[in-house]
Length: 233
Ligand SMILES: [Zn+2]
Image 1 (cartoon, rainbow, N blue to C red):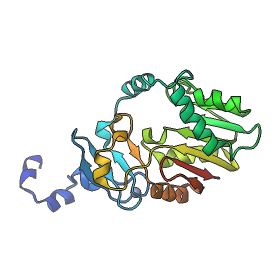
Image 2: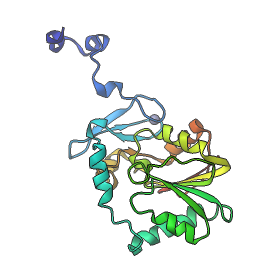
Image 3: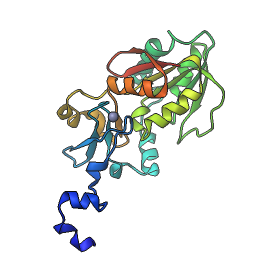
Image 4: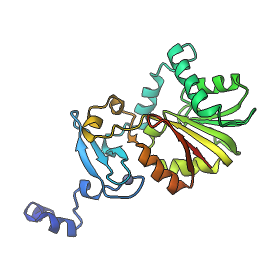
């Protein structure tokens, strides 16, 4: 059968189950059929018309070993004043206004240096951490707030992750996410610096997060429409 394929029309190939992958790719968030575009490095991205989610084709994903190595290169330490300032501004904007005094926080995806945990503890919060590569200890209990800074862009199955995190939130608990929102225009996305990090595979718009919130059963209570979104359980 395979040697006949070059002579079949596209629709015949489709019926025979040799559907080109681009035609069958479904959005991870809303299951709509996506369209694809290629950047100047030849990497393929899947774009969703419905929820505006963009994902890197899985054939370009790093291996877990390559991914871990890449995270170890980040200079995200307590001595890095720029990073500290960046995290403190996230705390002031997205955490402090919503967590009760002495509240319980889980920092999901803390990375090799749990700087956010230290800064939050300095403000009187009680903080647990989880990281797939650097602190893979199952988290239990219910939290007032879960933070995920620079995490969502690394996640291949965002719905699954948010479902899991919701189960660890107290009623009316908050999930504070920081990830750069995708540029509106596809051509701007294809030139965007943020997608150049080879560990960045998922890209969201404010609209994507609205669709996600409905799907997971979380309310959106704040967004700066740039890189922060806060859900309430
Ligand atoms: Zn979608």
